Length: 617
Image (tube, rainbow, N blue to C red):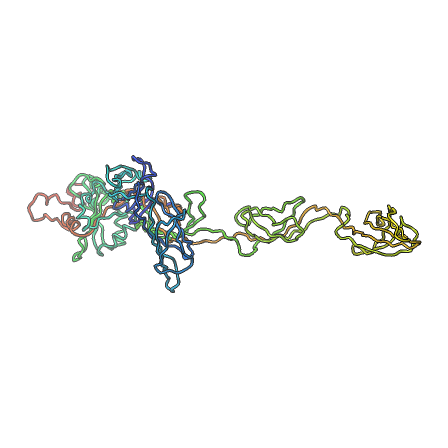
């Protein structure tokens, strides 16, 4: 987007609210809202922070159907309020609610009426509120002088609420401001009454100029009274021919005419006025309607009838552009900007970029981790690196829930441990009891077999010792080992002659593994990006190219000069009586003093060709 030049523009919008500086009070206790336009002159609505009573703060706002019923107001500071009993996404018709502050104190009332679209569907809420400040709090109160005019350099004077001496402050950012006036032009002395009738305004762009020309009766004649006919003056004349279909004429002072004799002698458009020079600031032009037209004419004045004012070729915008945040932490935003710069009606349809979690697991990835591992990992899920953890890891489960640092469920992870066999160990939680008879002579070294751990194994009794005798049977306490000589359990052996009764418990051997690492497969809910329109669209573009949506302030690149006066404009006046007076007094259609015998008739302006011939030039 190309950078736009600052222009003087018409606006009736409130432009910006800032703390005022360079005055007897700190900027936190006096503020102003810039109003009006650069053409007719800016004004400022001034407010002072003073001790307030219990007068309610009233206002209105529009909110979405899903609004949560809370809002903030500046009383002595920013305070948050809520509507008691309000339910989001519910249509209302003049429903009233009590308003409570953050300390649960009742502070006012609010009424809600739901607006409907063309299909009779609920569209948004219209909210009206009245909130009472707390007694003894400081509140913002307007100056009784409001609105006060903005003076040169951005200065203003305002009386505090309750009376007292007027105080002088400066509106920041307007240090280069000059009240609109083309000093020394033919229109500078217009009285307020005349301006109301004459329709005085200023032209600040080619679009303004073309509209002005097109408003005049077709076939009018445009006479320029200028110190020289510059390239820009000729451009103004060409534009008149294009927009109006009329002809242009040029009247220059005698000092310029001398150099024009050799250039424009044969050009019937050029004339000479009976004066040696004319300051650029006193340049003017008169548009005379054709015979029979009801309009009395129009007048243009100012140095920019001669000097090129660096106006844009076109000032209509229709574009989508990223917005620059004015402070850290604001979401990414963009806006569709449209309107005419010269009409000061630029609007911005603001959108915010929002990141929301996908409703399904839209990311799948795998990774390896060496042991030991605590079940945490990082991943870019759409908005940069995030930290995640497996709930309950490590455990015997193969699948775990994945959560982020905010505790939100973000998906699942399947974990496969990479194990290495390092031996076997006795599983004393899965013992097998047995009781069997064997014909044998041995006690120590007695062999027997038991089904254990899913297989039939052989065991040998060892470390046996006599413990008691029951009848004819001797009882021995023994330990049992497998064929590899590993202890596997214990019991007792009853010996009676050659019969042996073997009893006890043996335990299976289970493999012992060491975890060397993990293979992890993750199904994750990532972030998805979407654009959401601001709830308070469409927004006016403010001075310096600022736009505020949902309380968030941004700047539109390239519009830094929007609504900033530069003084590069042309004053114009249309209508009766003033313009008709000018057209009658300086009628170039013929010498109004001819036939009167007055001396002035002899020095009235004449065609350049005649003037040059009279002087032998």
